[in-house]
Image (cartoon, rainbow, N blue to C red; front, top):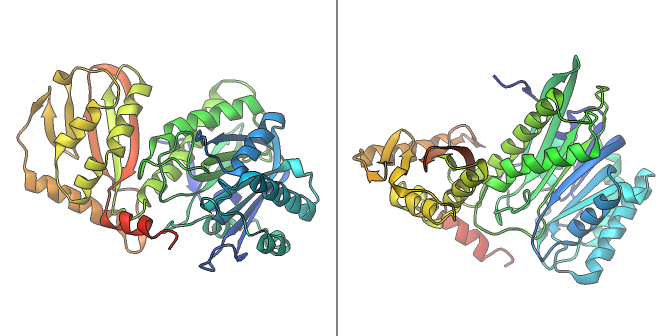
Length: 418
């Protein structure tokens, strides 16, 4: 049993946080496009960011900012314009955005972090942003999670949020999170955009280490289309408002908090994979028998990201050869004579040898999981297509998540700006 429970409230479930999401006129669609998350006291901030050489101005701004200052009071996120590949003016716009929020909240500008999402090469519509800031600030609420989660989306079909609660030192501790992402998903750092709030007290180095490890087990293990974004960022705040003793070193309490942080990140990561552009189902790849966990995660990520595997799943075709091929090119050494592959409960390869299986029933399994992954109008994370692969007798294991590749993915991205 998990040592926590899921609760309502998302990023505003932990004590001492407010959030808002409004329509500022940044998106041509007229949908909500500006979000703000605020801690009522200084919060320890940690971040993981894209490794792309083409980075959005807010990514560079946050990386530089967190290198010199570990505390934060607010995160501003705009949707509609990525503010990436916008030259020197992009950074000028980012700095002004932080200044606008600092003045409206009467906070130091270096306590504001930023994120942007949208079309690369487009500056933020600063006139619209300037006009919207007063409304954004007055909209802050302890129940503002849903509005903020909606305002950071772009091609997402659904907003993504979660909150968990555990007990540390006889007091409740909560972690909440929201994320956006649907396309351009192949993180090499964290995710498209994800914001996490926590009311525990944690030392800055430990909080950063926890977040980096959580990212490696969650957001770095998802893929939709193989494209890493220019704007990927994961930011986590811990403000200490649970009034629990500060966690400053490794131990049981640190392990419990990190496990819950990782669970929040994994939930959001899977929600992004399930909401992949044009996707009809979530895919979970489980790899065991590797020399170490990093090798297992690499194999799992390669399989989940294979266009051939993803296309076969969309076609409900139990073509396990594509799984074997993807595992073999993951740049992880293993003896193919020990390879085992299962699709759901269907054993397709064992000890490197093909196994007889009911192909029609295996195809039926794919159809069944796709149907169960959508419950009414809601996407479900409870019924993924399970691909299980063993590559030997090692102790390393890992998981990765992705989605199938449908005709609609091409339609969505062929006409993205037109």
